[in-house]
Image (cartoon, rainbow, N blue to C red; front, side, top):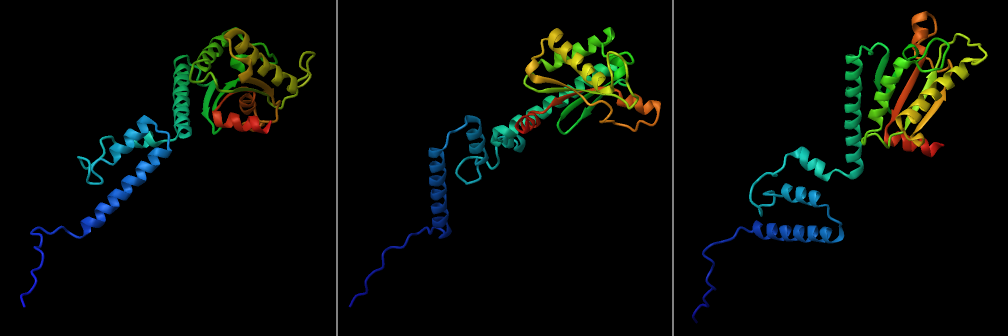
Length: 250
């Protein structure tokens, strides 16, 4: 009896792993199509994702992404993170701008710019703004206060909350106008706020005045130099997240 002839074998054999590989690629494609159908697409983010797959799956040309990694990261960055980074950059620019102004006008010893967790702090020694025992702004102080107001009214900072804080040393204050350091510290901060609002069109809803008397010193009140450090007005420009947190607690 004649033997049955086997079907003609393929001359070219395909590697067995290619079947599994092909199935995997098909499943991945279906998975991303499903994700795409359920999502709202940001054009820039979608483009960054597509470019990141360029060559990685052996389907598109090329072996690396078209964009550099930092640009890809920024494309995938969520909106909250992106706004925080932008705010941080704006605060850094503001700090540099103010410091440059202080250096050019020989004011660095009287005004200090400090980077705080809550925001940017501008610390004015009292002698640059007021005469001893007075809460009236000196005429020569109006220029720098107007300059600060101009910066804070700019687009990048027009939504930032500003806290003005008055501080004194521990030397008792007793005058008909200011019976104690409480009155002096509060009136000083109030006069700064009033000047910014009435003379520089700052929105009164985004600014506050407070006085702390002698009870928030930055140095021990043990000598004249340290007491001078404690007599100050602090202007704190709050970051958005800290302003929101403080509003919730009110």
